[in-house]
Amino acid sequence: MSAQLGGFTPAPGAAPFARQVATQARMEARLMLRNGEQLLLAIVIPVIVLVGGVLGAERLGLDLDGHQPVDVLAPGVLALAVMSTAFTSIAIATGFERRYGVIKRLGASPLPRSGLLLGKVLALLNVVALQLVVLVVVGLLLGWRPSLDNPPVSIGATMLAVAAGTWAFASLGLLVAGLLRAEATLALANLVYLLLMVGGGVVLPTSSYGAASAVIGWLPSAALGDAMRAALVDARLDLTAIVILVAWGVLGTLLTARTFKWE
Amino acid sequence: MPVESHAVSSASELAVDIDGLVMAYGDKVAVDGLSMQVARGSITAVLGPNGAGKTTTLETCEGYRRPQAGTVRVLGLDPHRQRRELLPRVGVMLQSGGAWSGVRAMEMLDHVAALHAHPLDTAMLHDRLGLADCGRTPYRRLSGGQQQRLGLAMALVGRPELVFVDEPTAGMDPQARRTTWGLLEEVRRDGVTVVLTTHHMDEAEHLADQIHIIDHGRLIASGSPTELTSGGHTATIRLVVTRPFPEGAPESLGAELGPRTSVTQLDARSMLVTGPADGSTLRIVSQWCESHDVVPESLALGRQTLEDVFLTLTGRELAE
Picture 1: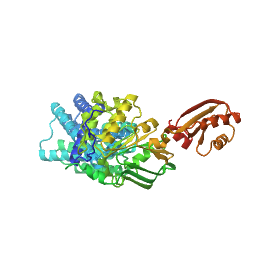
Picture 2 (picture 1 turned 30 degrees about the horizontal axis):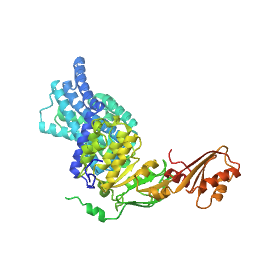
Picture 3 (picture 1 turned 60 degrees about the horizontal axis):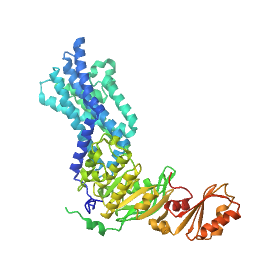
Picture 4 (picture 1 turned 90 degrees about the vertical axis):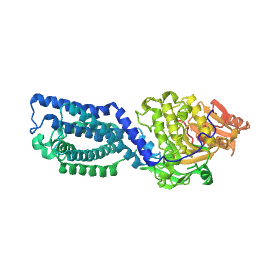
């Protein structure tokens, strides 16, 4: 044996909590961005929806309450991107973390559960920020002109909507991941994403669903979409939508806290 | 802050102290009143067949499970209630998994290292475990043996006082097993306590200072490898016969052999006899065969192994 004498002499200790959380957040963000399917979900599908929606609407001569299609679609696609990462990506990633014993293994490391959760949230916010930057650029290239009536309100209301939406969807994603097997989580998270994208009032305004809109309006997808459109089309804060998102966040968090199994 | 290794040695001499542990899943009892100790600075093997309760015992020591009855102390701490205090001081190698499927081997080890205050040099550890060639390989594409070695590296990287390794060499080729054994011996030499589970008696015999044999969640024997196998002074005879033994054969043979010998019937046509290695045992066995009209098919004489100890104690083979 060639290693230096005493190479394994015990010197135990946990790294400072902040360093542990930063390490965990970097790792989770890196893995999210490395995963092809998740990147498809996070960037490619929203871009396709945006470009396709704008081209389609122009071709059909669609009029959305007197607004340019891109002006209405772009905020909805930002909402879609938040939903894809906060709900679908988090659910699938966490489901497989449980399956592969990652959460169990990290449970025996100095990283406490609060640190694990915090790392996940930070990674998630990082990825969402990256998505939003890409999609805003694509939107601007397609001719999107967000409302400039009251920029501070627009920016503030957007950030509030993104934060509340991320919370609501992430808590629901963790709820699914904590209850089901990894494969079932994968299937359900993708299915719910598809259904909400088509019929959940996220890309298109809730009002465009006719009679069903009364129900759809209560969904977190519609609330997030409406809040983003209110902020970026009309430069106002849609308080009802934010309250609905917060209610979903509280509900999701309580249920997750009660049911989530780390192993 | 300096590293207080003196604080470690001034504490209790026991790294692990388990007293009357009971663990059940539903009505299936996994650990049934188990008591055992692990001395600091030793390699202790917990040996037993699959399903004996080894992993459950280890996971209770690691704080994953709360004892349903009895007490468990690890480095003097309650692993469930004082888990946050305990965890930085112990290293854990799970039986399988424990890494993201898309993470690279080296990246995973660096990650665990960064959670600790004074980690080992990860490149050195990778090298020592023969993982240098697959540092950039995603976890899911590592072989079973490479995943095991990475698991061991993850257990050691935080420079723990005590490591729990669950089946450390499962799925490894003989070369990798030797490397792993050498590393664990070096770790002990540097003052780390090692607790390992295994169902390979050669592993226990080669590595362990102390062996605890458990079966059905109970401790059935403890001792050093030499103590358990009587230092090679005990002979074993495996007797296989052509037709099933007559009723009461083990008792009848046992009566002829006397109290220093034990007879265990393994199946209808084979028995294991352990006794003094002085030649008389073999003679009595062959005489007994003749007088009871039993025709030996084979009569194998050997030095007692841990496998024989297990057989004698339980009447069952250890390996699956």
